[in-house]
Length: 536
Image (cartoon, rainbow, N blue to C red; front, top):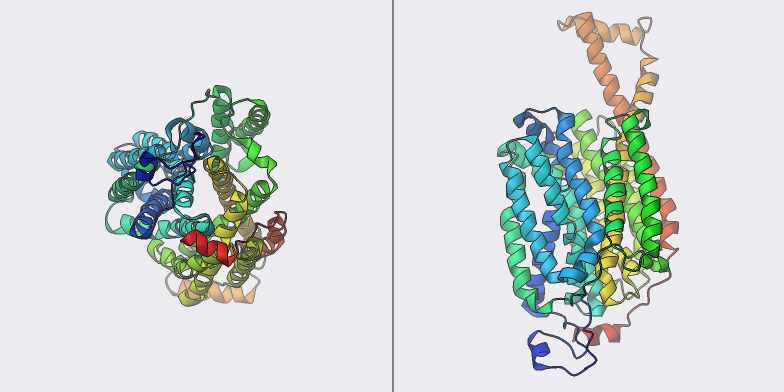
């Protein structure tokens, strides 16, 4: 939503009418084809942005090979984007005050497109990392502003529908990313995972500017909080690098990780104290005084962390231990979009009629169900059985974001929406990074535990071991090769047992997390009569 005008004149002037404003100076909701076009443009920009957080993951081996670097060096392509993006997202409220929401959003898209083109043109790892930093930084305001612009385009009673459109793109894009990235890398070349942003971004920027340029939010110049900005860059940067590199460097066994953890912890404490006492903070932490904001953001962040940890883990297991290609692994997860697209409009339409906490609780229960189903997977589970939970998960995705965002934004003034969206999305993105790090580490450590247990049953005195070795050596293998083959089978079983255990724990976590949802106060339901009048 955009900030109401500060003028005391409540009459509707000719210029206001031309800009599509209501009597109070706030932009009137869009209608008809303009609303459809605006929703599509904003959704495309959001989808493009979120897609870029995951599309490069499966392309790292190809990128590393082309640029003649190791895979561990190649992962900086992901880390650099994540660090810059995490720093930029919470700055959305401050930047909106200085430049205006529409101008900032369109500029961010155009800079994102330019950075994407430069990423595809990179001929060295250093160049690619530098352009990914730029890409991540300029992408920061796009997600929060797409949310606030969507909300400003719909009547208040239809805010749920706006959030439904936004949530579909935000939750489905990370699932589609590995599928699309794998296909592009396998069939074209890795630079095209960046080039595809160019036409989409130019279209989204053009349509957005055409429809919103007369709906700009007021600009309010305030002093720049340089101390808060530097503190934010230091602690968020240290935290993101620690999360991205922790598993690779064996976590706190590494001096680098320990130093990063200390810097992040001390920096966060300093940032918190400074921002709460600064007259013009770079991040508006006063929002945390609102019960529905902090409780809704907490439920959203923790729930998304568990969700995203499993989104990352599933294709890794399928490719490493089930022999799936990146494209097929992505196809297994893709059906989540079907029911999400089907149910999201219904949830958006009805979330204001009932208690949003009921919808969110239902979503967490469905997440628990599909994770319990996945906890029963074995190395012999077929493609269809693996795909069914992904299909059902679409129902949970539809009921997850909209109710929680409704609770987060409930009672907020329009001029607080960009800052609230930036802060809540920062918490969500950071929780996703934490979830990814925790889940991948637990998966590897769990596999080591199960591998040790399984190996304990393999010895030359065991008749089953002797028979297996005999069959393998009869095929022409040496005894060493046969033992290596047995070890591969043990690894496959160990990683499968470990991932099953994490799915089971995640199911229990989602049930426990329902309690977080009910910390929020119920958002006031919109009576049908009010909704009808708002629609007209």
